[in-house]
Image (cartoon, rainbow, N blue to C red; front, side, top):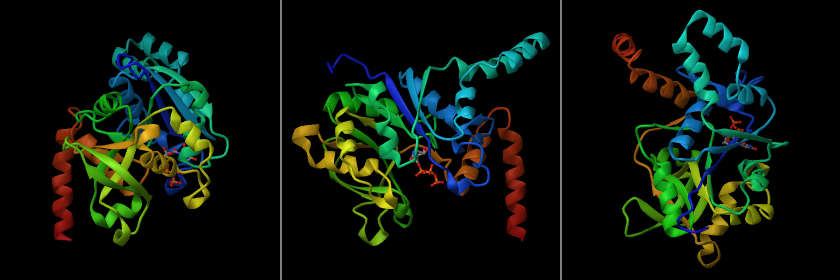
Length: 301
Ligand code: UTP
């Protein structure tokens, strides 16, 4: 890719089983769970579009209809709102329809994140692309993806997003072994361990759900054997690329210091809804007042 060419494609894996959210996810993907009044996946697509990625490929699984329908027109609903002259609600309905050029491919068996990303090979072709996990929300007020896209072009390498987490929760993430660079926000990744015990974690830098990958990742994924949990892990492919600086350009981490919400975990999901609602113009003041009362009640016991 020439330096002047921009990355335009985003891949959003949303085919996981979402078992932590059963029974809510029995007939609906977890990416459709509302965060205040928008499904989590819409925040993610908006983030991609905000960073200039207008071509979005979603990897879907069973229950994919809700996802496709959300980004499609609903003529009946639009007509009813038009007749009522309710332009505010009509605009909300149309927002998700007009966001991006949406494409879908099914994963088949959910055999892991690496397997999901591999399904994007035909669509992506021979160019770098971004991967955004459909259950990870980055606060729109904090910049991450744009920075990662810039670093990808500047370094011609693979870029992942890192978040410093409490050592007690590193076992929930992929942990990175890192070397400093001359940029305090960027580290070179020398190793990755999927969900390590605290005692053996190489650092408390956790890999979070944003990646900018070079197309060479597909070739690596093709020969990546199932790893932890019997799944084809993206982490395993990235580990190989991290060790092959000559061949693949290596892997770098952009350290994110902003707000991130994990909507795939029940407690974090509830926190995300409360935090985002508390910041909203239409709900914030009332919710904050209620929260203060509620917390005082908890203190009193
Ligand atoms: P998770 O690790 O959160 O797995 O996937 P999960 O299966 O969706 O959820 P739980 O653990 O059973 O509750 C991280 C991201 O990768 C996608 C998921 O949709 C999610 O966005 N994914 C995971 C796939 O698209 N395919 C897979 O085979 C696995």
